[in-house]
Amino acid sequence: MNSTQSFPHGPPAAAPLDGITVADFSRVLAGPFATMMLADFGADVIKVESPAGDDTRAWVPPVDEHGAGTYFSSVNRNKRSVVCDLRTEEGRAQALDIARTADVVIENFRPGVMQRFGLDYETLRAERPDLVYCSITGFGSKGGAHLPGYDLLVQAVGGLMSVTGSPESEPSKVGVALVDVVTGQNAVVGILAALRSRDRTGRGQRVDVNLLSSLLAGLVNQASSTLATGESPQRMGNAHPSIAPYETLRTADAPLALAVGTDKQFASLTRVLGVPELSDDSRFRGNSNRVAHRDELKALLEEQLRKKPAVEWSGRLSEAGVPAGKVNSIVEAIQLAADLGLEPVVEIADGSSPRTSRQVANPIRLSETPATYRRLPPLLGEHSGATFAERNNRSALQSTPTGK
Image 1 (cartoon, one colour):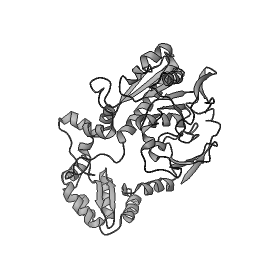
Image 2 (cartoon, rainbow, N blue to C red):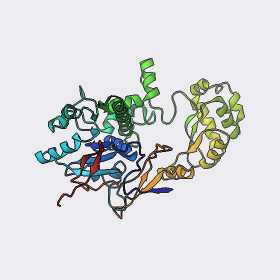
Image 3 (cartoon, rainbow, N blue to C red):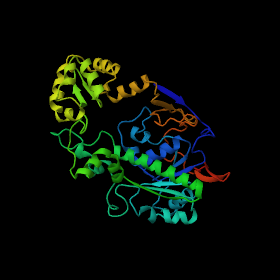
Image 4 (cartoon, rainbow, N blue to C red):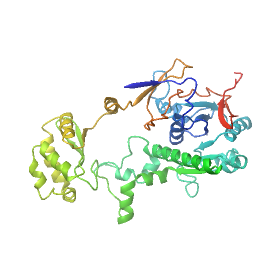
């Protein structure tokens, strides 16, 4: 299941973001996820932390075999940690030294906080017009500037919870902080676009992303239908508003997900289940009819599916070209990816510590310049004293003794 990759002397010269330095003032999830993605492809990321550290360092349990919080570890590999107490003049001076020599600054404080520290975009770009500066907020910098940007809150007020769960249940959040993850991905896209523009013009720019806008864009068809009809979609459990059967159904032992999107797939489904006559039933001929009679269809399909276990149905239906799969646990999902040759897990060792860390691999696979896993998630202040210094007209991270 694991693949091991160790680059104790830094990324290969061909890493796509080699030479790009990132001053990371973000905490918790969206920002750290974004900077980890940049670091995986060679960016030199210095994580600026308060004396207390990133909030997620204290979000335990669970912990790994070394006692480190798994939440923090999930989004902070390939970085260095430097402690700067921004409440002090010395700490602000240290942070400014790091920020003014970086290619990218990323932060997720509430609007106005970085300005109080003298680390805002306008202040920094006066000295560094080529700086790319990314701000992540919960609700933007205008009317929502005072609102706290927590994923659960945004899932609630942004409409995602209203369409998550069964019609009988209360609105439900998604099982992970998905809005933070999507926002982090949007931040990566914005930063890379700004760096590409800088390559042509020599000028940096500000990148603004916020959780609410990221969620609304991520609602895709649900938001589109709302704009077209003026009506908000309702909770449908695991069913799809526009396709049937496209949901989980009960088998002899476990739920089975069916994603039948075409008439051909439906015909194959009914044939495998031993009820081919359903394909010619006027209630189920064509997707629109199946959607209109979804409850009747579900009952008839489950009558057949209850005769065998989910894994058996999944195999038979997949062989017939019908998208189907047992609802897996996360352990089973990781094993499935391994069985399919996707190498979902990497074991990281950086050569400077006896520790290792098992992590989910970067999902982006580049054929010539792949992601690299060079550094364990850092201990708090592990690299204090580090600064960005110019080298061959590009920024590189240099470590200096702290005297401690």
